[in-house]
Amino acid sequence: MERADYQLMQGLTETEGLPGFEDRIYRFMKKEIVTYTDDIYSDNLGSIVGKIGSGEPKVLLAGHMDEVGFIVSSITKDGFLRFRPLGGWWGHVLLSQRVKVLTKEKDLTGIIGSKAPHVLSPEERKKVLDIDKMFIDIGASSRKEAESFGVAVGDPIATICPFEPLPNEKMLLSRTWDNRAGCYIALKVLARLKDEALPNSLYSGATVQEEVGLRGAETLVNMVEPSIAFATDVGVAGDIPGMNQEETGLSLGKGPILSFMDRSMIPHRKLRDFVVETAKENRIPYQTDIMAGGGTDAGKFHIAYKGVPTMVVSVPARYIHSHVSIVHHDDLDHAIDLLCEVIKKLDKDTIHGIIGLH
Image 1: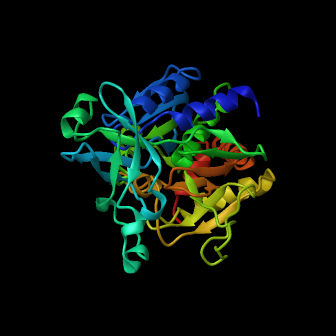
Image 2: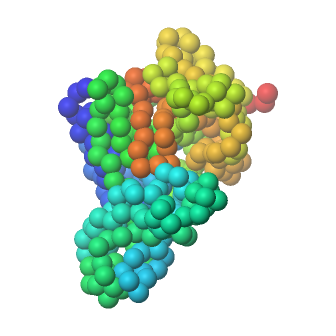
């Protein structure tokens, strides 16, 4: 892996950005975007894109910069923190994990705890523990001491896991591939195309608050007003023990995912076919996915104003919505290759043909 790519991945995945608290990752994204273009746009919620190319038509490409995490909901008299989820969590993946409480003054390390299993009844041990039965231990002995550390109700809480290539160095471990993978792809597409004579204006970057309702996607798409949009995200990899092909046939290293359906969107048929044909023409491997649950920013992109033909180009990831996740370097590269080839072909006539009557 090139050192520049390593540093970009490390910076993206280790920089915190909880829904509604994306300040740190917003600044990181802006710092990267300005290396490719000075033409930068941001909506009032904090979504950000850089523009390259000029004139019509407009093409939007975005990942989402927020990550799943938590928020401090109360402080007990003994100094423990109660918390609520920001985004989707499953109780089994939480206990005994380290977290980082982002106070206004400094970051504090804590541990997610609960009643010890030794004192649970047999029936209690069989159940997934509810989050409201958990707490975060920051080593305080009282509410007053916890507050003296700088903790306040409403502080965001992030996961902890450093970026690390595994022994197979194409397998990449981090805490936030959902969805810093999409941010990485959007930035690399900007870098790859910044010196191209594009037949369109490309707006590429990231949204906020995807994990809590696709909120930044709605504000960003209405600000840019694109003719075509692409959301880039992660999908659930099924190449682990216990999964089967009916649940998901997606595998790490076999190419980016072209989503044919999820809970939030069915892609525009002509755009879907155009992307598939472009992948075939350029011999770019890809996988397809039809998912009954879950959704992406595309769910908001495609229903903006009169409708925006939209496609989701993702990468498979293991263990998302937990403290760790794994993606494959080749899938990231192939997603970048595919999106670059597609965007270079999206001139006015091509887009008119896609949007035209079926």
